[in-house]
Image (cartoon, rainbow over all chains, first blue to last red; front, side, top):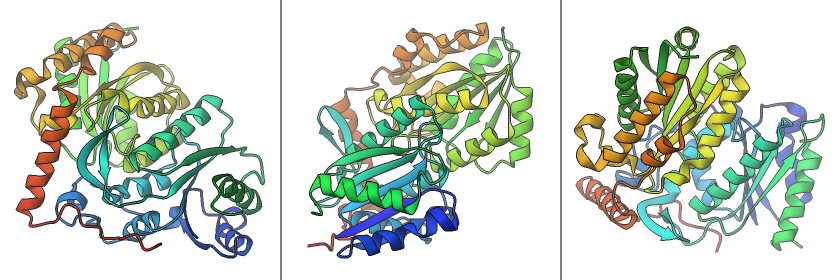
Length: 191
Length: 215
């Protein structure tokens, strides 16, 4: 069982750093990779498409974006965590997500009546989106729609969105571990 | 209130199709007497952006659809603007250059642009989405020919709305969002474009670089 977490929250000792360790302790059989994106300063996608036509499957930018793309395909559950920002992802998470397009193909297919980029790999992880609310219900709803759209375009086997309150402790490692564990149980990937 | 000044922001890291949309709108607005400035959102010092925003009574953000929303680098710029700028008394509109043939795939990204605008205090004028954007091939819109006739007609309607200080009309949204070519044709043409590029580079388009190691 592999879990990759792309964490777009501000780095903070209490809430961010401990999540990976707590989740590993809780789910003993799981390999957890926790990327604290705010401290990585990934270069934004250049829109060059070299990952499709020059070095297919790999981004041309030699930073940690490559390791993130590799982890995001070689896992059973991919988790996006972000403060709900204008109804979407905070820039730290969005920059990482843009760097995941090497994992799909430039070629187009039609799925459920819509054009999508075809799958590069045989299988893609489930996608769990966790938004930390700023108290705007319309934005929270948009965040869930974005997770759903991403799950379609990244060929996720299943997806789900959870919105957590921004209140102190609302996104504590304990709360997040509980949410991730619950969702994995619902999906039947852990018992 | 009718605006006198407009700022057109190119929200793409590249200077091609999203810039072409911004530049064409700028021409249309300038023809109607607005004082226009076009600027890159990427790699422009924040202070220059803020002073350009200060001068503009209407702001139009043109951006490419990146994974169902705004590009990450652009999002970072918008987060900074939201921290430092108050849009009260100004209006904001957005134009999306969508790489899928269905312009409707940009709906979430326009929701995000609207939420940004409202967060900053701008009046939201509405958003336009153009499908099959890469068909422009980096050319100015006036050189793209008949394929873009509906997009051009829609941008003209939108420019009239903006000049009048009105919200962007449904007619502009409809025209800009019309398919350039049948969706199947676009899927094949765009796919062929990438195949040709990969072949030129001697690259294998289907490479599974990070092959699934779980099994």
